[in-house]
Image (cartoon, rainbow, N blue to C red):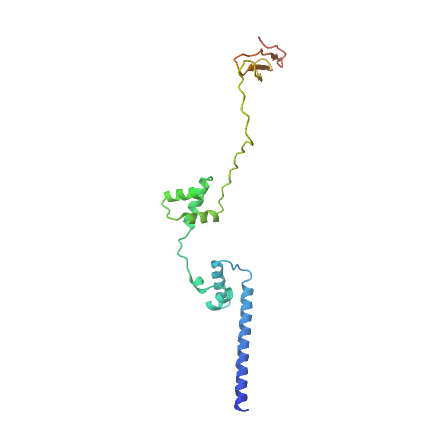
Length: 206
């Protein structure tokens, strides 16, 4: 074997090693993706959990795990400086249960009076996450069109009103009265009474 054949053989062995490495990496990626099938991949928190899972289960490096998940390593290393929401969430829940007709704006005012420094956007986010909603009141129905004004009569006895009344006495079953009166004067018409006998048959007293 001359020198040229030896170099050609060495190049083929290097190419074969590269192909084997690529195949092994593809198989590893496929195994990692199968490992993540049952996990959510939406949002930074879910991607951090997926990267940590691949590092723990398959002993992958952070760079490789981030490449498989499709996450930026800066995002994986980032730790939120936002304060914990547990205490504020609990207080907001208590106030919302005490005042069920209060929206997030009025609850924000109450929290500010108690010394809570959080902004209204944070209160609104927690309000939505807790699922608090206020049922909107239906607006009152408005009359369609314009109502005709009541005509005022200039002469007496031009308009009369009718009324039917009923009363219950001590010894009778009751009495009904049908009355009529003029709306343009103080004149009242004759009011007939219908007397009814009681259950024991006694007639009503005059």
